[in-house]
Image (cartoon, rainbow, N blue to C red; front, side):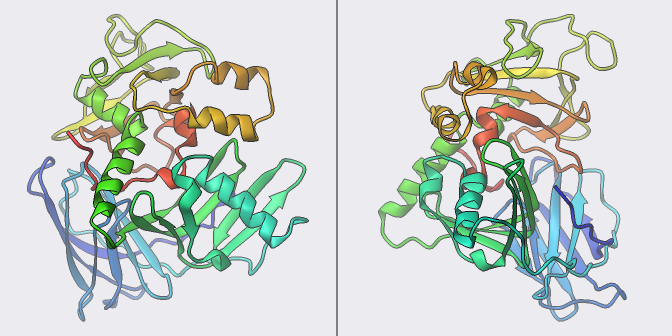
Length: 373
């Protein structure tokens, strides 16, 4: 998928860290390319519900739940955008300038009608899941869609912030700098996500949202990483094993067994204490097969494959069991919090196939949401 590169963006930050495990206050100033303060800019923590706006001097203050690392995003009404990644060892003032929104084509090209393209986009971006059935795209006109009939690949970009409403989970979701590429079987997307909680219209709404969010979380990648960090894989009903690749199986656990070799050749497990505070580090070079045996898991990805993936040897193997994921670390390392939240990275920190790959935009949960204990 083509990426529309931004020039370096600028935000002036003064960062105060109370603790890696406690709330952090981030203060700073948003500036334009000439270093002038920008008032009225929206500032938010990506993949959360947390946002604020800059004052007349371009200053802002925003609290975070204490993630190990996160992206702070500033965006203006003309969608100039700047991003800084905050990590526990980042305490000095940082300057990143707002960059103008890159030019995009006004329209896409395809033999499919606009209605057919939107249907293809919906099934690709939101998948064949329970939550996706009630997802409503708020502004479909901003989507620039292309489809290649030879490969059945769709590419998508947004001329402005892309927004959809997810009533089952109780959020309106806005993605800035949104881009996507792929089809119903395999796809990737990028952008900076802000969640806005939907206002409750009756007393049962919050109860239904809590139930739907817990169900979406159960058996997810974040659930697995939290169980791994807590050393409670068995209690949380996960199994993890080395495998030769997607579809293969093994009974050799990379988590609990001794004498395993990492990418550096020395015997060691795949998880380590991370750089600071309560962070953890994954370290392995091959595929790991993750199975979820909990009753909260479901077979929706199997039904999804039945609908969109032609019958093949791989699909038959992958759907022989439900709730099976295969993960790999392209960079051989990934950091995450004890809450199961991956640190942001330029490259995908976890590549997955199987069950998790079908948790698409309809299953996004904000990082500041906490599962029921």
